[in-house]
Length: 185
Image (cartoon, rainbow, N blue to C red):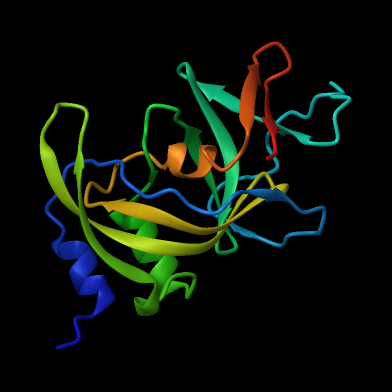
């Protein structure tokens, strides 16, 4: 029996979750990436700060309410995601998942199944997991095959967590220049 993706997404009964498994390493690609956007992905101020290490990629962030946001492209569609070192995976809301599906950026073949996660209040929730074939951070760091957990909360924040962050050797936050410096493996 085949279930239609939009119906399955809207039937989700979870509040919020972070989940995912360890993925392949991220890598730098100097190619020109084309993205559609839901937000202005070019609105970040660029720094003239120079890192003298070819393995370090500097990504600007925007801060709102003490939270750091970075530009991310998921299968070619641009978003602002929260840089969240406390989240184990990558999280998108059912609204973003549905939009990705309706625009052809996500298909039924990307559905990986369900998983359980523990949320901040300690409760366990069931959620759906999808494969994002290509997640690109600020047009610079390419992460193939990212497992994204879908929250049924349409207001859930988009979280860039450790499922992606663990693909780099390290990262440092430069608050003065508003950059996150990723050292590649």
